[in-house]
Length: 468
Image (cartoon, rainbow, N blue to C red; front, side, top):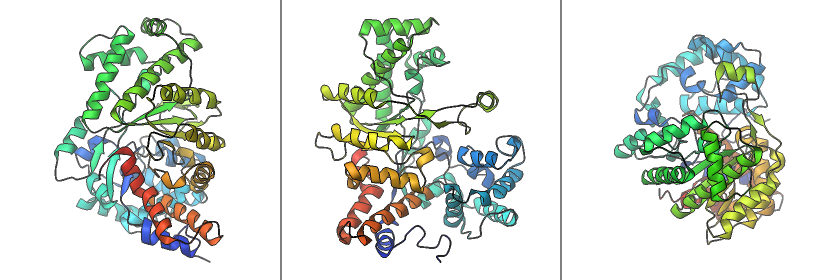
């Protein structure tokens, strides 16, 4: 029997062990999609205790605690930080089988040197040791990033953001990690959502002119895209739930936009036409600048309306959707490709039943001399666990090129989540090692080692043009 989470954790054969320890383990990290707060990086934040850095904003843990019957006051409520931590410690033993069990103990091991399993019995000692360490210099936001061997971080930012903290970090030459913005224009896409007109007004204030027509909106968006680009942005991100496609002419789209500004009711066709028009415009702008466009598909957000009213969004009440989207996605990509304006694109699906849809879709739009121009993104959100990662990589390798995959991202709000890259790398090496041991791949360690290093770091570095 193997020891729990030893140095060969998740590595089931000799080839996997060699691939991980000799090729994957020491590779730097490019975190090309996350939700870290750039303000905390700019200010090199110190954390008051383990609860703040570990439980704050982590809806993975919140969902588990709710499933374990923990009262909401210990999750998002006003309970003392220590009490919240103790309730998490109470929950951890029940998370066996959930990736949270592995992530929890990886983070305790890698950052705090704690091998003890977290439980109600060990909680007090772990609380004290973690908090004692958090007072040290190597546990500030920047030091945690450097200790994790991170070279690039791409945050997620609204088009109207000032990006002032990105500027601060870029101007500080004592910190050599690139912290770059990512354009997330969901609020301008979702014309049907509450708050759309208020957001358009804020956009007008940012660019210094009223926006009362589509031409003005597109000019403002182009200006913001160029501003983000000036600060090193290389990627956009879109949450499309689901993706739609319906063309309309410029005059028709302008009329729809004006209707929305006036508070008039929009038809479903109006909404589809507007979204299609704006997405195509943005896609062309990304292509001009050499950006990559990320498209996340398949979430039903805030399904619990009572908790949404109580806590707001991003608190753990989202679920996998069962949308039908393949035809609309194909038409969208084709509309950009037809005029040779399709940017580098990464497609993510939340429903694993759609893995093969995206894995085959990307093969129809490759080209332009860019290896892996269209990517099937890593197992995302509910799928960034062992089974989900394996299923994503097998689907990609079955009909595409796993060797051109740009690899893992954290998609996290926590500075301790870089342990998830280790988790992914072990799973990747074990998958390749299994193929070797089964005689399905040659035991060419130079070839396999290069593939591992590329997926861990080099593919993303080349693909996004980070030059680190």
